[in-house]
Length: 140
Image (cartoon, rainbow, N blue to C red; front, side, top):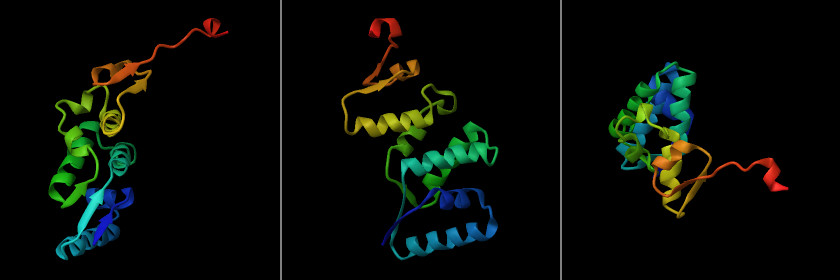
């Protein structure tokens, strides 16, 4: 059996709050893994958990990244996407582009040759082309 976790379950497992839900999530995770099953988490769920930790729980960016990294290493949950590799980026808490932009980049690099952006920091990543805004007068 394999199961995917949504953000609410991941947050309960990470924060332990609310306690009754956290215990239920932990018991279910232990049950599935104990029966030889697999538990997965997507990059989108990891992204949501990253923002929720910061905005709803007041966890600083660097600590949120560390907590998520530890969760992926210690919980028995497997990431479906590129999060483990992106989380290994040195200085990620202050990197430009940041965590979520790097997840987006990693996903695209599996399928496309180029990524278009207006974000100048994107030029630091491979296969990214930064678009320049056109003047409205030149468009007519």
